[in-house]
Image 1 (cartoon, rainbow, N blue to C red):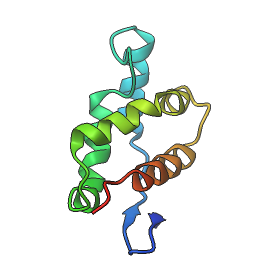
Image 2 (image 1 turned 90 degrees about the vertical axis):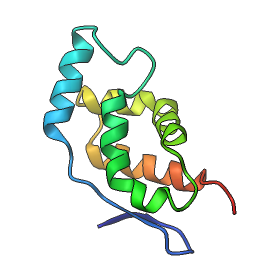
Image 3 (image 1 turned 120 degrees about the vertical axis):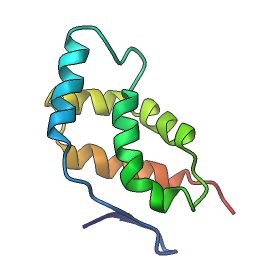
Image 4 (image 1 turned 60 degrees about the vertical axis):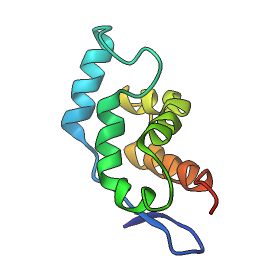
Length: 104
């Protein structure tokens, strides 16, 4: 299922929820071990692996991608805590990222 598609045909696939990663990140967060400023690098890397084939050629770097997740950290935190559904956060993040892609 495509999450977001631009007029130019750029589409991001909707990834399955990473349940084990969510559990790991939530436990680490509750123990105070990680995520002081935003989404853990593990989450950014996991999602980048899935979206990089589309976003990389469109001009987005991993650092900028990870920064977009940090800017949306409250929503990611709410997902980890069970207050947001995966689909809500991923669809919002996809739209945000595609709207902010570098212009050619």
